[in-house]
Length: 467
Image (cartoon, rainbow, N blue to C red; front, side, top):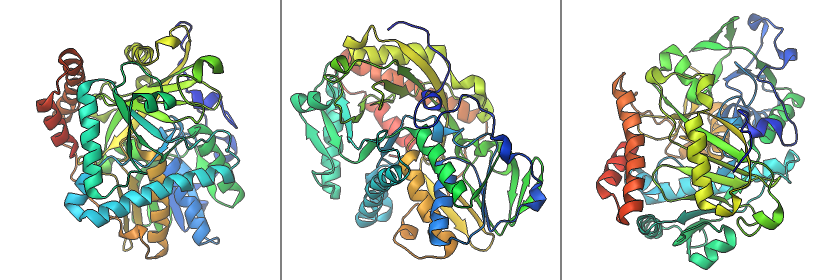
């Protein structure tokens, strides 16, 4: 793969509407926070905050809702992710079943699969049909240990009650019909995943909310959140209800600095690829894909026939630091390009044109959560660990029900009210998180070399990740 790789997010420069700057909308910056009249103030202009505003307006059209965002809408993970609307959660179904019972776990799973359809329906409503494709998800096994793990996962899912229509094993031929990568043993397929253009969706959603009376104030930074009061860099704001929807950027709120851990996930994207070359490799139905390695990679075929491909492996930065300088990493460009080339050798001469990334949030127990305290009016959602496109939609609907006092199946889900413990102080978390990444890479290397599972590392990673 040749060509100049630009340090730019593909989703900023393509899609139904684009922007090429990180500056906030100037029309939203001239106001006095003391003059803002709101029933609900949402801190964070990503998917969680915007979906919450959307569903609150659906339930209460008269509600005065204000969204504040320190940069611009979609600046965080919502505008920089891999573009999967999947039914995956950071915690496994087996873990949920052990802790809450099989029926509760399956109810959560059904809520997530229904949420994928809800995201697709909202995409159609917002005019994003062409950029959205529910082609399912293919997890390919490219080594014998990966194949064994995938089959074990399917057996476990069957035991818990997951139907074959929701998760099924594909042989080499069936796999190649969807995604033709090298060294394939087979794959596991779920229909419950859609490829989206996250930049288009977050921008369209924000534009729609503005037309419906939601006030979105960009360039306004929350410093602290208190009952009935949000302190910003331009003065305090008052509202009976506040929603913290800040995901990885939660660490910048002093009282929550150890609530989440910011982990960086980075991406590359290719130039547009001729259909005669791309169609035999990735189905035009646009399934999302990854393989069964421990060091996660993930990809999608975009609506304009590129491959957007990302992965973990970028370092965690001491003290949970977040900095624009961390959004790109030349080592990760090489790592991701090599991984993509290994999966699709026919694309060796296709240029990689874009490289970007950003932080996602992980709670200490690797669980996402939704909370609302009616006594203080304080709500929150997050900790998606990279599975936030769909999960944030479910969170927004759940928060809307909680805030309006509506008892529903969503408000009974086990993530409601969940409170994990805080992350350990430094340097413990720096050593632990970066050590975990090295272990994952070591496991992959050992399995490729020996053809046998690195079971001791698997067990250690499962223990740390709470699986």
